[in-house]
Length: 319
Image (cartoon, rainbow, N blue to C red; front, side, top):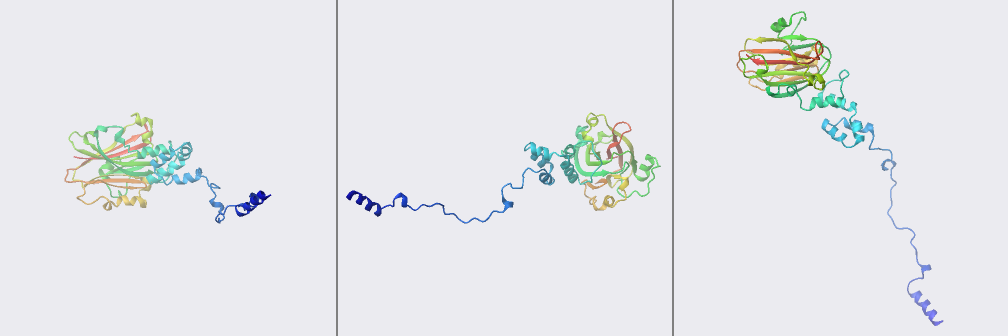
């Protein structure tokens, strides 16, 4: 009995029996504000949404689009959509939407921006340097080619090409392929031409339809340039100039900037080539030092005999 009493006394003095211990049913925690539904993780937003990435893609350049498309199959399917590449191509070339094209827009973009030019395919040994001018459009099938930068005034298509070149320094070219055209300025060695007396260089305004480099007949060498006209300017020339116009837009406000040549050809002692491009026209000019005149040549490439014109060249060399 005494032992039990001592045990009881000992329990009272120390810990409480298990049945009497204070139990903590809940942990103490801080107050939490209600979480808005729109912040719930992936409640309604999906990272893989076609429409969202289509809009994002419109702000990227071609290189970034290719890198994004290489991420996985889903991105490749979305990014390589032709709608995206058409938008990016027209945006970077700064041209209006053309008639239907025969190739994917991703291929057309590559052809326009991969650094290719016509002398990479042929006569590479004659090529010296080049400069990309930009892009313009043909809405009609008739082009005006000229070596003068002032407005040609009243022209008659009934005149012979030889007479037009001699009188006005320009000529018409029919059956132009409508659509987007790319314009470059080429500097080549004169042996490319047929004048054996010149060992200098030749300036060429080189314009082509955007689809040209993707055509199998062009790559195979089945299409070539033909001379459509040439003549000599047998007096001192202040500059070597060349321009191509869509006749339909010859009097448009955007084309008038090309004819305002004093605003862009540079000063008399500026020997660097200058260029001007509009929605439906392109022009180049290089101021010249003392000379005895120029030989001017107009060339065109067609899609086979009697086919549409897909490339135009206007070349000048010193006499």
